[in-house]
Amino acid sequence: MANTNYPSAENPQNQNRTTRNNNNTTKNIIIGVLAAGLLGTWAYFLYDKNDSNKQIQEKTLAVNNAMSSRDSLRAQYDMTLERLDSLTGDNNTKAGIISDRESEINKLKKEIGSILNKRNATQAELARAKTLIAELNEKIANLEAENARLNGENQQLASTNTQLTQEKQTLETNLQTTTTQKEELAKTVDVASTFTASNIQITPFDEKKKGKEKVTTTAKHVDKLVVSFDVENRVANSGPADIYVIVTGPDGKVITDPAGATTLSTRNDGDRTYTYKTTIEYEQGVRKSVQVPLRQDHFQTGDYKIEVYQNGFKIAEGTRSLKKGGLFG
Image (tube, helix red, strand yellow):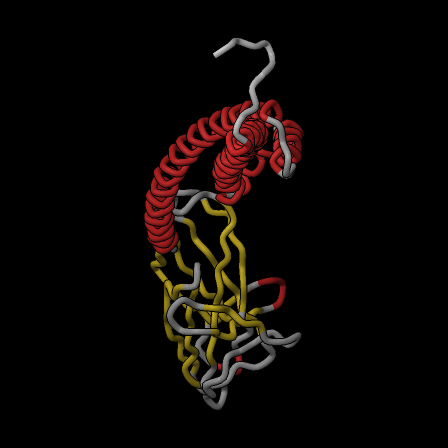
């Protein structure tokens, strides 16, 4: 067969197959490109989403950490305030300690509260709050130490006060005992200082002209009764002493001063109306004679009872009888 440069005619069926293969290749290439692009888009989307989630998680973690730090600081702050309240709530003395530092404490409380009340407080602000809470706790610790010192001093003072109270009670008891003993001694001395009387005599006198006197027992001739006795005491102090004389007539009535009756309070006989009072100057330990004259216009017939009182006690007693006169008496 002879060669030729002209292409030989191909079978139509083969040509169609070739064309179809070429079209499929192009289509596959386009699909592959589109698939690659789609995969790239999804890869970028997934990467971007993961990155966003990571950022959200980091922000959430930061917020949670901030909230956790703030809550922790809030709890610490609340405990600090409880310590402070315990100091001011006990008594006025401790409250006085707080008041001296009130300005500093209030300043710290104000700044700490301002930070902890922020919803979006920064880490720097929270760190500042933490430092301030530590400073506040230090001040409170100093206050507690001072409070403990004052409590110790108060306990010592209370103990000392108790001891002084006991000593005072002991002294008062001793003083009361001493006072009682002193009063008893004073009573004893007072009673012991009462005069003793001796040699009591009751003499009726008839006063004559020119100052002459005559002893008589006839009632109608008697102008005066003279009561005489001796007094003595070795305990009584020297000085003036009052002596009271009570004269009771035959009619049972006490003879009194016409100007009015006067009363004497006695130790054993109650109140007595007395007839005559005289004041003598007494010298301790020296016997002294006393005379008390009793005058009246008319003396009755019968017995006259004479009683002598000194220092509230009866120290002497006697009786004098006056008789009725005769026809020429």
